[in-house]
Length: 308
Length: 254
Ligand SMILES: Cc1cc2nc3c(=O)[nH]c(=O)nc-3n(C[C@H](O)[C@H](O)[C@H](O)COP(=O)(O)OP(=O)(O)OC[C@H]3O[C@@H](n4cnc5c(N)ncnc54)[C@H](O)[C@@H]3O)c2cc1C
Ligand SMILES: Nc1ncnc2c1ncn2[C@@H]1O[C@H](COP(=O)(O)O)[C@@H](O)[C@H]1O
Picture 1 (cartoon, helix red, strand yellow):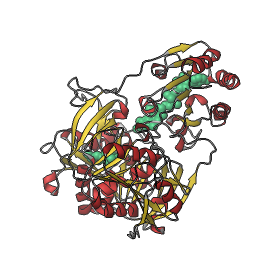
Picture 2: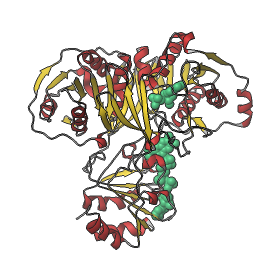
Picture 3: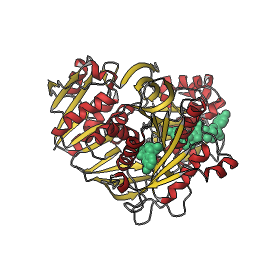
């Protein structure tokens, strides 16, 4: 078996998610190559070469792959896929955008967001917002898979894989990158943070999210939100935790003014310890919370910040 | 411009699902079914494009069992002009995987040549998030997934996409494939007179064989289990008690 992992990277740096995908690849077994596609990605390729378990890093460094647009990136992966039994990527918005396109180009199914490897062709994945876990077996020769990072511990760094260039350049006259508006934050990334504190509709408005800042500073936490808070315009979309937003599984998750709809729980219920602060003692979030505090958040949050 | 919208029949998002005791699948007997919420957003976007004069005809399409015609009627009530049902009951049971649906949709796109195809980003039953991207690959068209804004401008469409770090805008040549995210629009409800009128709108039925495709699944469902139950914990009486428990009992803060 041989596995090709699409590297995830942002702002010139290898993203943490890649080390989780390599961990999933190790559980499948076989040689693991990492593909780094993008423009000016030499440093990223070097970082990928250090990941434990990687045999080879293949680098497609070309303007065609800037921003990893789906059309050229999928064409590249489909071109290389012939050498492999598995093609893997993170279940990030990049992986989700590109991999199904690769699968269809190769006329195979895709297996989305696996959380466990049972054997090289059998995997576990959540369905119905995580209210059921399916074990699925691929009947295709080529397996195209996205990996949920929270299901696999990242591999360490200590390797020194060979790096080789890929010359294939996909032409793309169909899609053009125009712009990106990325949230700037000094806080840890939601998916990687050890502590996450999220606000919901109960926060009332965007200004009140500042009440979470001081606590997040003290705990080194990332800040998340429910869909209702994002839809209401309190905070940007990239903060949404849930079935259709980000999946997190930190050591500590604090839900503030969030009722606990199944779609929200789908994104955080694998957290180690869950705290809920809600003024409604009947709120469903208390059914999954290890520690529930029935209180008005406008009183509880300043007090919490002070006590920490 | 003709616009296609793909709609899928799924469990209503409010329903709490149950796993069958034999762990063969989720139990869908007498469970409330509905149009996938992301497909409602897709239909709404098509209707708005028609209201703006960009779309001239809206065709709603589904690939699935006979009962899925209910969701096509809903799309017709919301403003679609006609509908196509690719009836899979002869070939598979209820389960049509994304690749199979994409293959059937791709044949219809070749036949009818729409300028834009709008799908949901994800079906809330399988949580696959694949069909739009697969359809784009099979038709050789560009894709704008997870859209929170769609602006058609002559021969091109600009799509603003919800990505992990924020928002990204791409420009695609038409025809193109778009998948909807939650913030694209807020779907309207169907009005009673429109529900009545929808019954008279044309609804064509085809089979996968008519289209020359097979929609059979290539992923075997080995078993379905309920997730590990979380034990509900305790209520704490004060912020002090909370901080104490987190420090000394759970040991997650210092
Ligand atoms: C297709 C689909 C996908 C979805 N995806 C997601 C997703 O990914 N993520 C997600 O989060 N949701 C998602 N949802 C939405 C989900 O169903 C809920 O609507 C949403 O999670 C509710 O957000 P909320 O808990 O902030 O708001 P509400 O349900 O309105 O709850 C607000 C809570 O705040 C409490 N509160 C109010 N004031 C105070 C106060 N002063 N002090 C303390 N507590 C207070 C209230 O008691 C209440 O429990 C999705 C829905 C659909 C249909
Ligand atoms: N059987 C189907 N019939 C019609 N459209 C579908 C079907 N399956 C998926 N889709 C479309 O693809 C979207 C994403 O579904 P999926 O990729 O399967 O999660 C849905 O919101 C629909 O718009």
